[in-house]
Image (cartoon, rainbow, N blue to C red):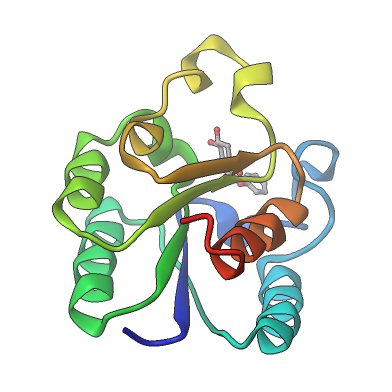
Length: 146
Ligand code: CA2
């Protein structure tokens, strides 16, 4: 087991901070990575932050997380949260804890965002705190909550 926390981000999150700031805030993904790295340093962890627009890439990275012995995965699967049985199966197939993370609160938004396949297998869900959702998820790992 390593002290690495893998942070996986799904489709369109590469546009964060550039579009729809009223929903997702004005931080870019690089800003969030920097904030998380600073906090992780204080807590004795290392952050490995990634983003992809491809569902299968997220599945591959979850499998690799198991093989690499990462401490936990923070997963913002974006729209795949609400559609991907492949991600649900991948999370169930690995033993390391996966925390579901969202900037917004999908339960407060359109009906089609209320269903979360990721949430069916995640150890914990942190949502609705903007970039702070990622920090709170990291702190939950550090506090041994997962
Ligand atoms: O609130 C979240 O973190 C979401 O995972 C964001 C997803 C959405 O599909 C989920 O329901 C909730 C959307 C990410 C799209 O990111 C954008 C960023 C900037 C501009 C447009 C989209």
